[in-house]
Each structure stands twice: as structure tokens, then as C-alpha cells.
Length: 166
Image (cartoon, rainbow, N blue to C red; front, side):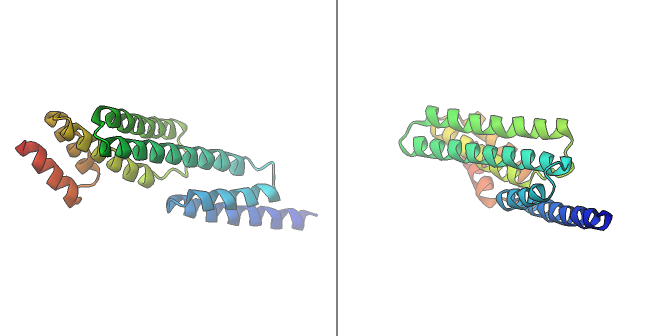
């Protein structure tokens, strides 16, 4: 019986390690599936439960940010820049709230790469909407914030230069 329990724990540990690696790679859906396999083996494992909760929240957040960014892009393409700004601001707010939540919980499996990429996209789109609305100072601020996260982004550098020239 003891040997069987040890094997079970080894299997759960191996699955959780695989899920952690997938999480670090931003593969949240795959990591969630692996975590659920670990839960199937040991439904009372607290680490598995915590990881499942965290991954579910991350996936939901990324879907919300993606949806808001897409809505903002659609509004911009229709010339509704004020509406686009609202969507981009809300997306950035969600990203900020998630970062604060992750820090406060001090999760050991936290990896912010995906959040940062989404933040760069949302800041860029926000800056573009501000530029189109002739809010040049605000667009400069948005592009500058995005470049602070992704300093080698040539497109952002170009957009910042255009905003400064406006």
C-alpha cells in the first residue's frame, strides 16, 4: 500500500512539474489539462487545486483581454476612437489588476511574459487610438510605456517618432 501511494505521489509530482513548465511557456490550456490529470490521480492535492484555479483564472483573463483588444481594433477601424480607447483602457486595467493579484498571492508558478505581451499590444493600440483622436501627448505616453516593456520594437519606435512629430 505504501509503495502504491509513493508511486501515486511521484506521478502527481511529475505531472505538476510538466504543468509548471507549460505555464512558464505560456501554454496555459495545455498546463490546465495536465493539472487536471494530476487532480484525477489525487483529488485532494492542494498544489494541484491551486494550480488549476490559477490557470483557469489566467485563461479567462487572457480571453477577456483579447476580446477587449479586438473590440478596440474594430472600433478604431470604424473611426470610433473614443470607444476604442475605452476598450484598450479596460484591457490594460485587467492586465494591471491581474499583475497586482499575482504579486499579492505570491504564486510560485507566476510567469508574466504573456501578460506583458498583451500589455504591449494594448498600450500600442491605445496610443494609436489616442493619436487618431489627436491626443498626441497621451499617445506619446502610451508608446513610451510600451517601449519600456519591449524596447527593441521597431514599430513602436516609429509610432513614437510620428507622435512626437505631430
